[in-house]
Length: 130
Image (cartoon, rainbow, N blue to C red; front, side, top):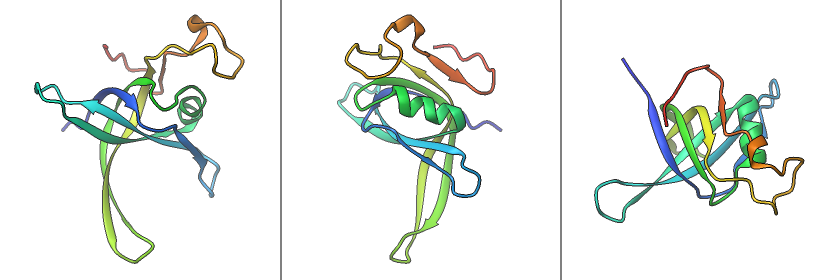
């Protein structure tokens, strides 16, 4: 069986970085706006979840409006909302993220040269053609 998702789109918001309370593992979430390739002006907004060092790098280098490619798996999870209702959410858990927008000179941070900008973080050492 196979559960593999490949998406290219623009971030709809800045990544939200937080740490798990039990062991302090980094987790970031953001959404991608992905255009459909059906000849119509339709866009899907897909939630992305990124873990560990990759989450910290996404939070540091990605922001609203920047382009990114995400390779991961689709996950459907259930949770109970504050009002007690049960809800389900579909999200992509990223295995690798490729930053497609160049780092602008106005962004803060130690790196100013696009060649030094990390273009891809792949935790599974898997070659993915883009």
